[in-house]
Amino acid sequence: MTVTTAQQLTVPSPRGRCPLDVPPAYQQAAQETPVVRIGLPFGEDCWLITRYEDVRAVLTDSRFSADATRPGFPLISEELRAMAAATRSTDAFVNEQEHLRRRRMLTTEFKAKRVEALRPEIQQMVDDTLDQMIAGGSPADLMADFAVPVGSGVIALLLGVPTMDTKYFQERSHVLLDEAAKSEEKMAAQRDLMEYVVGLTVDKQQNPDEGFLSRLVERGELTGEEVAGSGLLLLLAGHETTAAMIALSIIALHRNPEQQVLLRQDPSLVKGAVEEMLRYATLVQNGLGRVAVEDAVIGGQLIRAGEGVLCMLSTANRDEEVFPGGGHLDVTRPARGHMSFGYGLHQCVGQSLARAELQIALGTLLRRLPELRLDVPVEELGFRYRAGLYAVDALPVAW
Ligand code: HEM
Image (cartoon, rainbow, N blue to C red; front, side, top):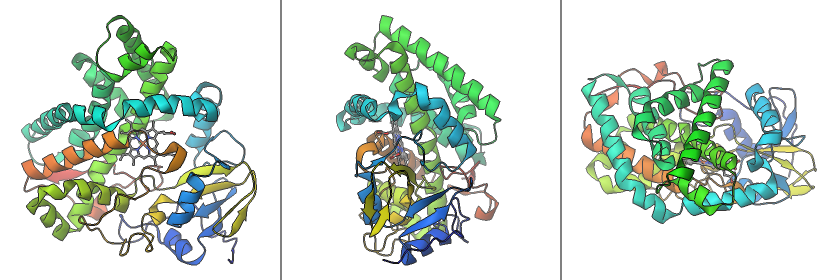
């Protein structure tokens, strides 16, 4: 295979005309040089992996590490670099052996049966949040008035945050994930939330309930601080992701009205439609970073120990070999094999919860607001082109 050292290609790269299309530079790489050397904003290089098969190969290969503190790991923003340095000594979840131990505990908690049992409460919370948005009158900001409170509300439910604290929890979570917030504000919010979750964990030790924190405490395998750390990890990983996905799904349906009609006519399509939205919009827009710990050959290209790779989920999700016509949204497509939750050792622990939440949120919005529509042209939406997660700052809607 020919390999270029195409330094013109950088991550992040600008999107094309349609804000839900993959950046043209990545698509071009996928067609021409599926494993290509690229530049990163800090002047470092890494390999960009764009094809479905190659992305899967890297993500299941133990010769590639997800430990962002290792030299050579591709970090595409100052913030990620600072976070990696800060977590070096404190976050055991990035250490490989410790990761497996903690992950096992979380996957037990996210078994389909447990998540299914949460559905009625999620439905209630989605309905209550929507009641409030509707009571505020049309137009509204679907992000601030629905998607974000639903995202953090579900994590609050999971952790067993008492109702009286939900507002505080949501407000602090919002600041933590707010693109516009200053970094001191974000750090203060993270501190407050950590303190809060530590306090909550102590409370669950004394007054156990059915929630996730209580169960982790009961198992007795983690210290109080570690239990609280796991709680905060879920908040960070599971709150903004689902909120952003709700907003992107509504935008995708707006741009594909015939798909919206299909979905409104047959609500049983919602399960498959959520998979298709996850595939089509690929939230993790700048790829998953890994660093080779041994030499490895991927897609015919030798990657040396110490070199970083970025697995581009968005191009893998549109790989014509796996998803024919993948550039189009098709809510009837069997899209479940998409890469949006990653793959292999670090595949998203919360995916069954995310799926349940998205199915309920989207199904409820379409059912209860038959006239739901964007209140501004798509071109006026503030897309977060550079952030790790693709999202919009606000989503004005009317009904
Ligand atoms: C649409 C929603 C979501 C998307 C697109 C998403 C995506 C991802 C991806 C791509 C990874 C893999 C990272 C890597 O390999 O480096 C991941 C990991 C993870 N996700 Fe999610 N996620 C979502 C929702 C959630 C939710 C709701 C939770 C929990 C409540 C969650 C918890 C986690 C955790 C704990 C990990 C780390 C797993 C590990 O390293 O072993 N995610 N997620």
